[in-house]
Length: 399
Image 1 (cartoon, rainbow, N blue to C red):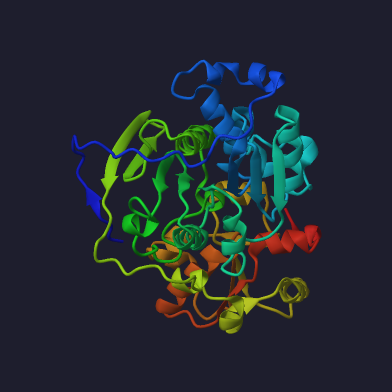
Image 2 (tube, rainbow, N blue to C red):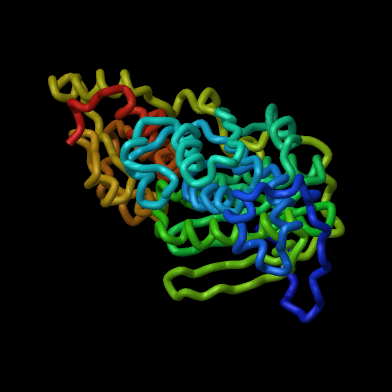
């Protein structure tokens, strides 16, 4: 991946105009609630009225969206839109602080809405229970002043960038993985966009998701708070934003680094939304039918193996800690890393049918490709991974 990164200089970052006009005067209750903001000369009553008049769309009520939404509501942003189509799981609670134990099984939108109402009932919370894609992004973004992108996949990041560029809107981007976080502001009208930093997506499977690689829970608060800081500066027109700058945070060493991002004068203009899964190398399931096995078929084959009429090896390619949390009975743990670099191939017999699985199907697809390249012919992987297995209530075969 090649990007235009410029060395840091002392050149001043040009100021940006306030994104939002001031709304009506604040009520006495609002004056008291936001008095600590109003006392800051750079914000004052005018800045707080801009915040009260602002409309901010947050992509995802997960690790980054949780702290961002809480602080946006506390800051008095008038309208908060949330895009999410997921439900709350127990594993979310380590970092997604807007949700609680009682919210498990609820939609993240409903959970987030209730938490925000408890913090600031004066905020208008708009729920968008959809998966963001090229068919709805432009319509969704059109009603908001600024977008906060807390998505955890590259397809959505490029989609957010292109839709915001086409509409001339700024957005704040954040990314987290393990102990590392990144945050920046993109606004093609005044500076670089995300494609100037990452012109091409990484090859599928080369960058693990948080579900695959883990994330230091407190890192979400650090990056999420920075995202809100940038949104507030954009709305009120104060300070220097991160437009043209990338902040990189290493939580393990507690160090921040800054890198300048230059706009690429030779980059092709963004003129339309595209197929972002295809752009990022993600093929739909129907294009890989011969490589997939469904949950019911696996259940039948496992029953056949128990009865002695089937012979195959079920390989779990996740990490050991995931295997300890839950596993399909009769599976063998061989993490995908050892399959990809060849160090684990001695553990995998040839001439025996292989069925692979991971959490949701991405890592098992990578393992399948590596095994095929190594000469293994009879290999398939479980569609949807162990997530699909659990969802189908095959708990009788869990250990």
